[in-house]
Image 1 (spheres, rainbow, N blue to C red):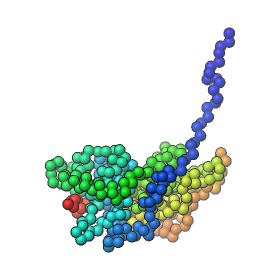
Image 2: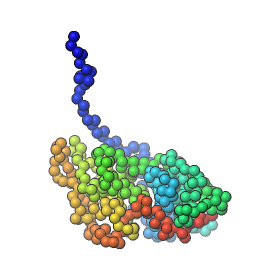
Image 3: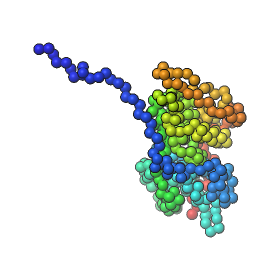
Image 4: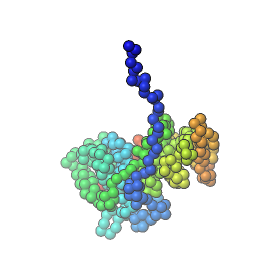
Length: 362
């Protein structure tokens, strides 16, 4: 009797799994997020600006508040997703509430707002920390002393604790209880996985730095999180000289990701302007990424050629910018203006600005 053939012999040859086509952004979430998007002109008429604060001063205070969130989050070992959500809550709140004191009404201090936004974000992202640990971290960061001993019965401890709990309701009301945040970090990682470049450490770090640095700006009020993620991927690919092929039906990669090239360049140009005006030490990948795509001498990201599988590679040259040469000189100099590193920026900003603002206003 001949031996029976193994069942494995009858199996079809192994075929690699086809890449799943990226889904368009959730319509409900996109509509909810669109209610919190503004034009650059509208950002010049925020409640604080209307009450007499200069736009530059407001941007500085926003950056201080987000850096406070970041340093407290690092001390508590919170995930980046939680810090990003807290920064979005922080920026959205300031589109409805002024930072300027009014007669009989004291404005909310940006450190207090940052602590409250972080407290709420830990709940939303399910990365909760003990209230005691949060309060102690806030006290240490505000007073620029990471080893500060905080007595749970001290006045400072209870002032921070009561202030956070009291202002949580205020924050929720001003946010209209709109707490569903689609952070760009998650969408960026999905894009990296789709193009199978998530193991490219240089590309991944450059894109991640772009998204992280965007938290200290008002970019989350100008562009959707999906656009920010695509802009981070675009700038990182430009910096690392990585090309993405067109889809089988001939569409460029940004169309596949449901983003327009115009919106991507808008986000990149906005971040370039912010890198230029934030005097932090050079060498940070986020800033190098931006300078790479705004310099006329930057390497070409996409070649107008055809790949081995027949897919055409699309050229992605941004329009010429007269500021490009200046940005390149700034990038190469020792005093270049670059972005804040995720693990250095918060401490440096609080060290330089936190001492005079360490107390929570009662």
